[in-house]
Image (cartoon, helix red, strand yellow):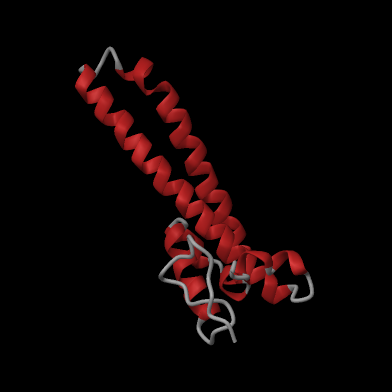
Length: 132
């Protein structure tokens, strides 16, 4: 059994194919969505559904950060001094990069979960094949 994981794999999630993969994926994904999502047993029963919801949630955050970055200078200029606006833009840059990396990690975990649900589909195994 291979324990290879692609670059960007979240350190909190065990590799696919290991005993605790699904449990650690579920715990990690629950940390990425609003706490209210914990109320829905269906998301615990079907981690692939939780992964999908987490992907959409974080993708919306990426879109919001991009929109905030685009409009911050105009919206804040009358209210915040120039150095403050620059600091806000830097916060958007950093948070945007973090969110994009997080989105990529979610996509990797979702692909691994899909490979368990659809083991015969080679498309779900591609990211988990080490490059020589």
